[in-house]
Amino acid sequence: MTIAAASLSMTGCAHPQPDADLAAFEANLAAHASATEALRQWCQQRGIADPAEILAVQVSGADEAPPADIRALLGVSADEPLGYRHVRLTCGSRVLSDAHNWYVPARLTPEMNRQLAETQVPFGRVAASLQFTREPLGSARRGDPACPAGAISTHRALLRLPDGQPLAMVVECYTEANLTR
Image (cartoon, rainbow, N blue to C red; front, side):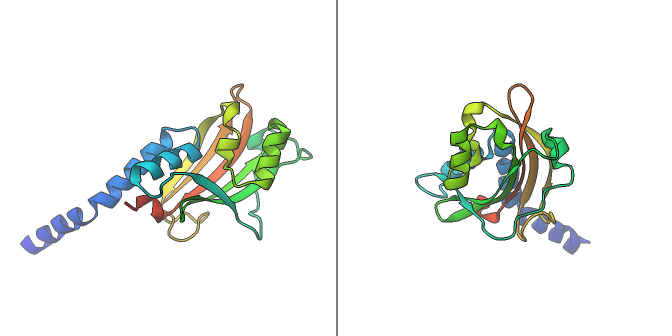
């Protein structure tokens, strides 16, 4: 019995920092409408890279099939065009997130649409002037089938314009690199 109690005690002490770091990371995400800004601040606070600049590196290849309810979530008809962006958000040389973003191009300016198509500027920074808010749709820790192996946290959210109109739906898969010091 003493060995079992000592073993449990040691097990409990072996992992508190990663769990505390993950809880702090998720609290940081929850405090921001933009995952881009949350990641930039996290990168800066943790010293992951200097400068703490977040880039959206486009992932080429097969596009993710949109969720079956995407048009209803975004409030668009079957014939209205949707934009899609699959990116890896990086800070320095570290990939912090693998993200899928379905959005309504008609609710963005032409310049915003150009930036999303042609640059590595993250969606949150491109659309920041629209003052969108973030409505969480769900989150999970580790092992979400929608994410690459090793993802520490998955967040799904709807981004809304100030008038309540949906702008985008995101699936964000956060990597172990976020827990690096």
